[in-house]
Length: 134
Image (cartoon, rainbow, N blue to C red; front, side):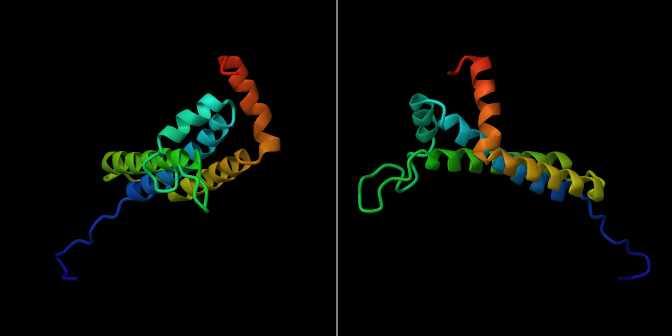
């Protein structure tokens, strides 16, 4: 690099946007999984998002992946939409990556815990009952 040239400025916003988008998609997968387990009608509603995926409906030797196709679709839509939007909003932002890394790891751990039914089911049932879903 020449003496009068400046190094390009690298912002942390796009990295935070990409990693937050992954967390949001993972959270969407968890929520849609629990929602689909509440009633058959909600399972069909979640499944409706993924009818386009091969194997979503079928009775062949491999069977059907069922509502998981809708859960995948919802997670992919949230991931891509949030990544594009947050990247565009934060492309010139600089965040503290040390703080973000701690938040990311803690949030990831909490979302993983949300997939364990003995821990999550009482919370899910309480919220569903409060909202009148079940």
